[in-house]
Length: 228
Length: 315
Image (cartoon, rainbow over all chains, first blue to last red; front, side, top):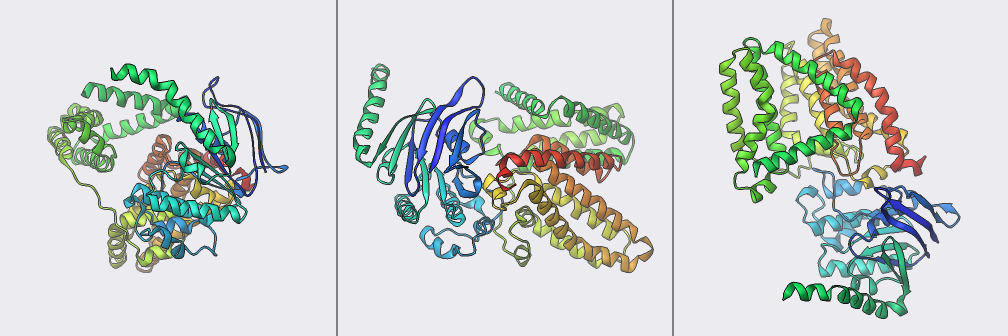
């Protein structure tokens, strides 16, 4: 169990991007975090992974501090070191049991070509292969479906569901709510730096409806004015 | 439009300077002042004024070929070549001024003409997926070398064979060693993604020592055969390539420590680039060497501190 308690994070004080956030993330489950742009999703994940220092609060895994040894992290932006091949990138991760070529039959990447020539989707697939190769008990995925085609999205969904069955804890973000409702066990809605509401599968439909209505109602007047 | 763009450039420069901090700005200003003095003295007569002009033009060509905003400028500004011209003229202005003071009119004209020609260059170096035997010999952890060798393979291989084949000439091996020592400076320019430094699963000290060890092994592997050939033909001057080898090893260690002192994932630090150029200068102007050695000690401590933020879980 990952326990986040009273977490506060800021880049420039006094503006708090994460503001007193508390959340429990159970094991062997897929947790979705949704929120609008700028709601603090990536900041929360960076803090969870330990590459952003919190101002206050604590993050624990069972009774111990959560460390990078237990986690792999897929970041949103596709950045790779220039002039190395996909295979060389994967070669950095130590997992002899991982058969790169076999896994690549799912993604069809040109692993022996330099990454600079890959498309956005190919880079995302390569980053995902790296995450799968690391084989850590906790996987943090920031917008993993961005830039991917329908087939790959479905492939990844199937892989994540299998990984959950194998005991992995997965934390995943998306600003497209539909990508999470058919995958996650829990969805947490992040707004103004705090978890506003959490739902399990039984509440996903109502949650989705409520979110869309709230967004539409908030903007309908402005759109009407602009379109006159 | 050009004024607005230059205004942005000035703001970028001020931001980079603020990022460096007052102490480093003063220190670098001192070094730049010294460098400017050396250039001023050098360019007073021929042929040195031609060398200074050539150095400046070479720097502009490298800058122009490597700049990443060309596509952006081409799509947003009709007069993008004029923008290049203004930028390069401003960069070359101190050299032009020095040449005018010394009445070196021909090198000055050459400099001005070269700036115009450089802005017309539209060549993009082709990136190749070369997977040579050499690539397979480099361990995965030495990804900087894999990338760097891939970039410079077609230059390094002929150079190495020329050096070996002409090692009976006394100047040949030292010149090739010098070039082979300068090339790896560019290997450590870019900060890798955080996943790459975490993939080693080592603490900061172990990580830095691994990087230094890899650099020593790989650099030694390409230079020791050349040094051996030199000693075979010029035994009495054995110390020349040996000193050169030692100087470059210390420079490379300095570069690695500089990179990780200012390391931030996915970025190229302006501060690291400036200190790397001091390292490169030290290979020509020996006065800089003690500075490089002293800074190496300081940067070891600082890079451990910086890397601890990312690697503390492996302590």
